[in-house]
Length: 345
Image (cartoon, rainbow, N blue to C red; front, side, top):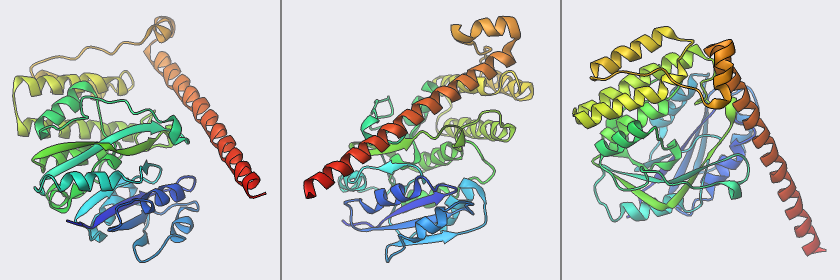
């Protein structure tokens, strides 16, 4: 069995990363593949860099900016494969990632079987990626997968999945109304359309930390807060459609409690809506608490200042770690080039 795998890459202002991401797709040891890159109206050199890779198996399409979901929907209209590998324009996959999952699908003939992989965060250097298993890293039923995800505050990046055409068609298009967590909502529908999830431990993907430039970063955006609320309510609807029981309602309550911190205290309207949702599930929410590092700020200056301090400090820490890893990456690349030159001398 040699299915055609379509690697779909939506891209927007991804100039620093897009070449590495495309090369990551090209290096896949699974030869029967196509690569579809959709440039979503980038204002930097993303499109010109992507076009350098155009070939028989690599196509590049550009469109006016429609957002991440819109770019992915364009890719869905164009792909020809039997399976879909999503790959964000700043992420990477190990060379044998697809091959490992195809080997696994040959052992599971159902086109409704969904395949996931191990994954790790990184900044610039893959050598610094730390693969930390979670309770999602195993074979699961769709309902158990969602219970663990929502009840324990877990997730799997887009690049971890290998999705059959049958599941992809059943799941439908990406929701263009969502600007935050559109991937979480979409893959909920993918999971609903599957009959089981198979975890392939030797398949690996890498999820780049880009900080405040990431679509998944909420920060102070009211638009993303509204989008997250919509996605959360859809998550709850999807899980309860599979099983409406005390354990699924408990997972939904924990899910609401986990994300309440994204809205409190600056969005009292959403907080009240979430309290109503919790009441409908037979429970109640508790106001989020701050760690000791920020609790004293809260006591003196109030919740808003304490939360703003937390956001600023996290951004600073993230920027420092990213800068340090970038410097190490440049040093390692320079050191390698020197060794190559010395070897040819």
